[in-house]
Figure: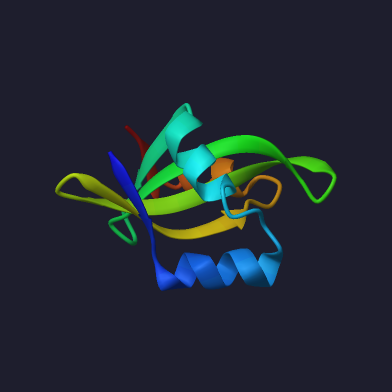
Length: 93
């Protein structure tokens, strides 16, 4: 599947000083995937080493025909993933 970065995710990578390949790696390798009821986006979550810490990173994306468009990336705060799952905002797929 072809992977495309949105302008927003490109800006986030630069702003947060995140390696350009990280969103692609999270999308391709994440074992945790969710549907976000609030945004309608798909979410990939993976634990990676970022800023010298192990942390969960989320990548929001959409599928358009044969292309995955990666929309945004951000490190999740402690408990943020669990909270979104427990409130029903994120549903496992």
